[in-house]
Each structure stands twice: as C-alpha cells, then as structure tokens.
Length: 403
Ligand code: ADP
Ligand code: ASP
Ligand code: MG
Image (tube, rainbow, N blue to C red; front, side, top):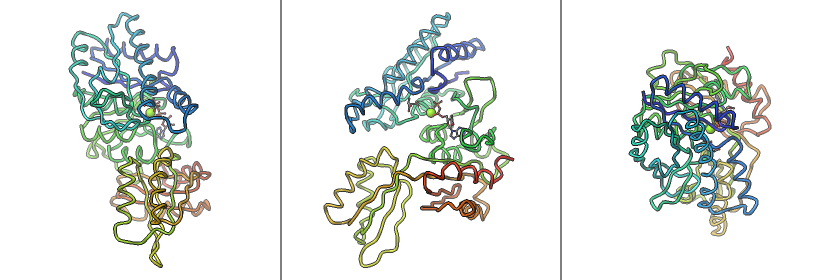
C-alpha cells in the first residue's frame, strides 16, 4: 500500500517524539508499505513565530508572515528525515515547493490549486521515504504561501489525493474523533466511524481535530481518512461515506468554537441591495462570514448582526468603516466575548424536536442564546463565552452522548 502519514504538532513536540515518529514510519515501511510523511511544526512553534511578528507589527505583511510561519514545518521535516536516515532508512525531506504544491496567492489562507506529484514519485520509486513540510505551498510567482491554521491536515489529504494513496492517517494527541472535545468533557466517547458530512460540520464548527478544508477535500477526492494517536497502537476513527455507517445516531457530536466575534451593524439603510453590497465587499476582502441575523426594519433602518473569525475582525472593520463614512450605517459594535456551540448529526434529518431540546437545555442552565442557525444536520447557537464549557457538557449529557 501507499500510505500518507501526517503527524501533528504534539506528535513531533520534542526530539524524543520525533524519534518516536521515525520508529513508527520505519515499522510501516518494514511491513512492506510505501510511506509519505507530512509533518507539522513542533507544538507551540507556529504560535511563537506569530508572536515574534506581532512584536514588530500588529498588522504585518501577509507574505512575510508566510515566509516566517512556513519555516516551522521545514525544521520538523528535515529533523525527521535526518533521524530516518540515521536508522538506515533512506529518506528525503521536501518543502511545499519541492512537493509540487501550487496555491492561489491569498497569503496566510491560500487554497491549493494543483499538485505535481512527479518529484514525490521519483523519490518514492528510488526507495525513499518522502517527508514533506505541511501547511505550505507556493503561488504562481514562486512566493511561499500557507494554508491557514491547522493546514497540515489539508496538505496530507491533498497529497494523498494527488498520489492516489490507499490510506491517509492523521496522527494526533487524541485517539480519534470523540463525541465532543475530550479535554472539555472527559466523558466523551470515541467514535469508530463518522461520515464526511458530519465531520465537515464538526470541523467547520470548531472541532480543530481536523481542519475543515481537509475534510471537504477528503470527501471530494474520496480519500480514506483515519484519525488516531501517535502515542499508542489504539485504533482510530474512520471518516467515510454515510452509506458505510450502519447506525445513524440522532446526534453524533458537539462542537465548540471560541474563535468567533460578533459584529453588529446598527441603523443600516434598509434599501434593496444593501446586504449584497456589504457581504460582497467582505468576501472580496477574504473575510469569512458565518451566522447572519437581520432584524425587522423600521423608519427605513434595520440592524444586521454577523459573526467572523476573531483574526479577521480587523479586515472586516476596514470594510465596515467605509460604509460608516458613506452614511449607509449609523453605528458598529464588536463583541469578542462570544462563542458558538453546535450539535451535529445526520440522524437529525429525519427527526423533529432536536433543536428544541438544545434550546431547553440552554434554558435549564440559564444561558441566554444570542444567535441561532440551523441546517439539515446541525444546530448552532451563539452564547456568551463564559458559558462555553458548561453548554458543551450539558448538551453532551442531554443527548446522552456519554451513554
Ligand atoms: P495536531 O497538533 O495533531 O494537529 P490539534 O491540536 O490540531 O492536533 O487537534 C487535536 C485536538 O482537537 C485534541 O487535542 C482535542 O482537544 C481537540 N478536539 C476538539 N474536538 C474534538 C473531537 N470531537 N474529538 C477529538 N478531539 C477534539
Ligand atoms: N503549524 C500550523 C499551525 O499550527 C499548521 C498545523 O499544525 O497544521 O496551525
Ligand atoms: Mg491540527
């Protein structure tokens, strides 16, 4: 088999753990498989580099940020390759560029456009383990780009797709996908399987165990994706097509996203096209909008609330200030102290009362719901950040996920 193995930050967190990864890779090779490894930066490294940049500027040029952040993964790739060679296992490390990963030019959240796997295949066919620095690529002009936080997962899935690998294993610090973050609710249960769609919702709604775009791509390319721990041999969770899952629980999991801010626009001119103008401008500036609420207008005015990722508030503010100057909006407020809790499950499609139970659970805990959005397979609520963990635990127990 051709297997892509991705090791996250904690799994390569120090030199001993990198050796542990080398041992695992070596074991897989000895079992007769070809292995391509994708690595993250050592844990804490990317945050440290971000803080270095912020020491000099609150708004550093994004191309420079990419030059800086991409270095973390290269350190790990080279160290792992050195360790493998020392064990007598021929290996070579590659940057995103050498691995043929071409992206668009949206620095710090670039999208992969194509992968030319020739270089990787050449090295594999000469009997080497290929170790690739995750989280990065290059744009058409050869500038280094990065794929958004958590982006090494995306590198791994995209590479597995390009190589038509038999399996893509994501090694992390928990033994699979749980009914909720086991660090928040120790009673969370590990799932044997989960559908691409449910995993995509969980990831998009804040479960950082897999980056959401990596799940989206895995579904599109039909990549066999397994999440498991690098610390033991325990079996992980298979992310697969819905039809491969026999039992369809009403609710599969609870996600928490503390990385959102709420922007409230007051006194918005209530004219046809205003929402289109505002949200198109935000999209042009690469701001990701999530929940939107427009209240009933009166006197030719309306209010508009929406959420954006915390690190995109500055970009959003720049756009909104223009509408303020043009007197299309009277006032704006920004609220950082919110979070979003969501319940996800394909079983919801065919059941009623799932959302009502979420609301009554919040009511029983005296938690005020600020915003709500629903889809076929999820219910999301924005609440005050101080109730985040309480909300997750009460929902987990309300849907009997600990049973
Ligand atoms: P890595 O560094 O390996 O990429 P991450 O820190 O990005 O690892 O993701 C793993 C973390 O995701 C876990 O430590 C856990 O706290 C968190 N997590 C959130 N939701 C879930 C969930 N439903 N199942 C498992 N882990 C989850
Ligand atoms: N090192 C990057 C991050 O911390 C990418 C990753 O770990 O997936 O976001
Ligand atoms: Mg991660």
